[in-house]
Image 1 (cartoon, rainbow, N blue to C red):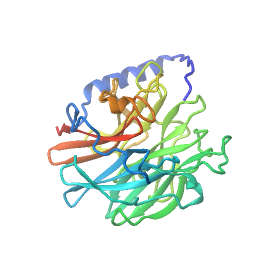
Image 2: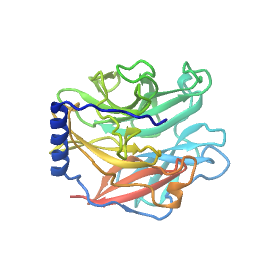
Image 3: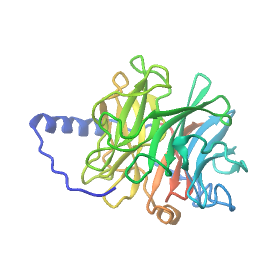
Image 4: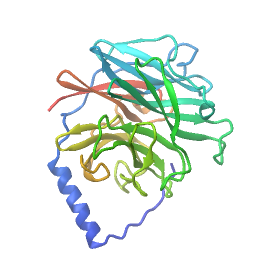
Length: 336
């Protein structure tokens, strides 16, 4: 992303709306306390000379039969990404599969591969959104395309592709790639909802919202972003959905990844109205998690914690994140 100066001219109504948003943020508290890293070291790191030799990062997690199942982005030395598979009894120590569980096969995945999964379980079916990255013969100006795709599974290992669900360059407001689909695991106002990342005309990455009747066919619900970047904040350049949102009594709660003007990635949150998932009720003013460890600051992309996995395990929330686009870390917070 490239920084740019953005001037804002506030009308009285806009000032009032902003004040209401600040008040709502002050009244709402996330459903957990302070985050604590479960390990000072990554829980998964690159290994060997094969499919996960260059990077292991950006994990999705679900709880299945009392265990934490993780699918994560695994990158080889050529830069091609596949999805690795790992299982843990305690949420920290993972047993990895020797082979990827999902990899590039479709034309929209050529060269770059399959990236950054998010998994939502609905009525016994796992819905996985992921980025299909074609860096061979794309239609973008640099022949590269990243597009939001969908696959489904009954067991987390055998997947059926459903293609590109939000094509690049064809959105109602986004002018470039589509990525990072976070699907709400239940209907709201009679539809399914998904928050995603699009490239806005001002060169920042903003959050959009799409709806669906069947979880397979998606369309923009708005002709503008639902969550924009904010000059001077931790999310001034990027506001990108993290794990699938959670329905709370107060509304739809979503963790997201924000990048500032120095492209330091940290974690924020936003709360949407449960009867109108396009309406923001409250939003974090400051990040709750940011790069601290050396392996979160030094890697393929420096100064990144990118939360993509979330599960409630016992009386704690467990969070899984990519560190510097090379490692996977884990954190926890008590449920409240």
